[in-house]
Structure formats: structure tokens, C-alpha cells
Length: 64
Image 1 (tube, rainbow, N blue to C red):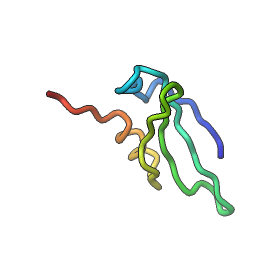
Image 2: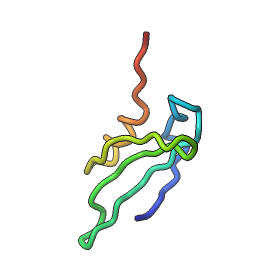
Image 3: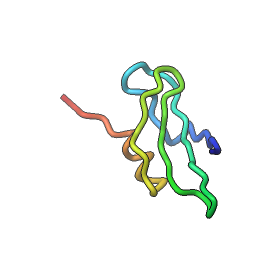
Image 4: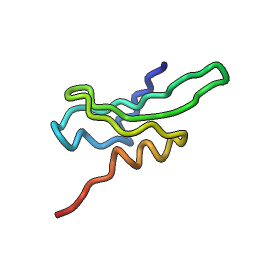
């Protein structure tokens, strides 16, 4: 598993305000999935096979 830090594209954690890390899951045939995780409280998105979708899921905020 490799970690790619892309702070400029990720919002801070909606739960604790911690820094977010972007994870790439490596398989035998290359990257097989992505997710974003908080470095403080370990909140994370679901795994997805689309890099942009993982970022979009993390940056989603509910208003109201």
C-alpha cells in the first residue's frame, strides 16, 4: 500500500479537523482501489476504484 499526500485537494476531517491522507491500494496488477483517511481520528471513506471519486467522497459536506 502506498500513501500519496495531496493536501491541496483534500478538506480537513469533518469530525475532528485532522489532516487527511489519500491511500492507493496496490495489488498484483497495479492499483486496485483508493480511499481517504483522517490521520487523527481514522475516519475514512469507502474503498472505490476511482481516484476522483475517493476525493469527492471525502470532501463532501452536508449543509444544515
